[in-house]
Amino acid sequence: MANPQRLRRVADQVQRELSDLIRSELKDPRVGMITLTGVEMSPDLAHAKVFFTSLNEGDREEIMAGLRRSAGFLRSLLGRRIKIHVTPELHFQYDASIAEGVRLSNLIDQAIQSTPDNKE
Image (cartoon, rainbow, N blue to C red; front, top):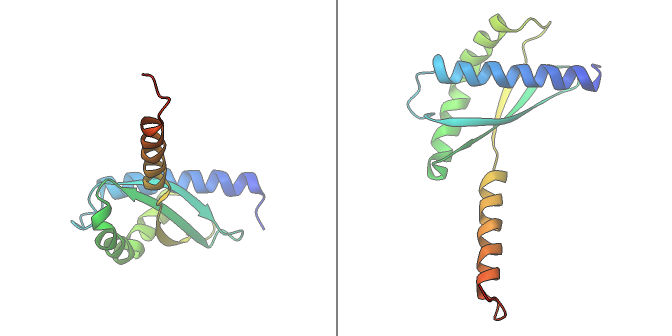
């Protein structure tokens, strides 16, 4: 089992390399502009859960299909760029935390504006 610092370093490197590969090498029109928000590695470094977000939340299913279809291609390119014993299998997952944060921020703004003692 890898130590936590190594897991974090490998996850950071996988995130950087995948971001570059998706931007420069991936030609699937379904994927478009996405942002990788994080990577979680399994303790044996055999699996990587890759979290992504997109400005177009309506295209989430298409983006997910494109990423799943491209996972093997991205894994092979990733294996050439990083030097670890086993290239991790890539599992993509939509990260709704940013959209949820925006929603909560809007709710707070609405609550502040609707209070009767608000004297702005």
